[in-house]
Image (cartoon, rainbow, N blue to C red; front, side):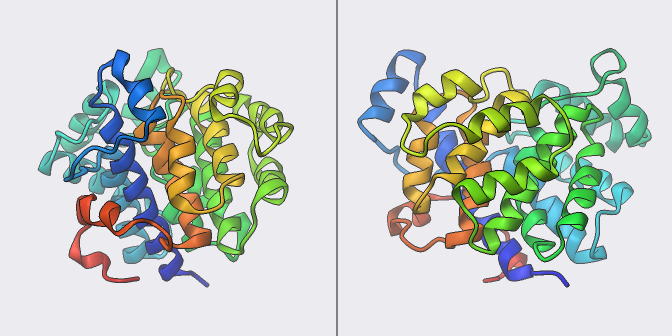
Length: 295
């Protein structure tokens, strides 16, 4: 049994977090800390990035097949990239998606990245929240399908572990889990990895901790890797109340803000919906495609 309503809600939260986070990357390094501390929001429109574009492709494939067809997902990623390559894709992803679009086998392209190790970046985790919500009633399937979605672009086990962690966090959020319960579920299902090791560390951090200190312990995406991004994002999501406050907390330390906020937005929205998000934020955020509907 799948849950399209929850998946669409997670998708909307992911897009909001992505667009909100992207606004802060327009600041100079010197001005970012001051702007975040003062909660100085940018004027709209807030445009979303590759995080949202790729998440939409994941959701499209789930709607079409009911599971992750990896060949179809690779094609969907490449087609979306070809249509709009200016969505802040990472340098390696430009190359991957161009080669897939040119007809090269996605598995070969993905394995060739980084001297044959595959990418351990955070790209597979940033787009997976709607999948976790889609399969929320079956965590075994969440793990399997999240891994399959990751492998299309990220062959490294750490990237796969990051995607599994975010998908499971979203799935259990649909049921209302948060705090220690959410962290325990995620740790239990995440493959043994550096991601899992940092999740264990995150589980020991008190909910009221300053997110800047937490980022110092876990990372907040400055290395653009799954281990450096996912544990921090899941800690922020697990300790969050409402979605808007969760995004402020997540953004405060800086780092890969659009990606950490996309992850947190997807996970938290799966539990809370977009209730409490200021209307001005929703109006500023770039609209999602009409095919998504109202959920």
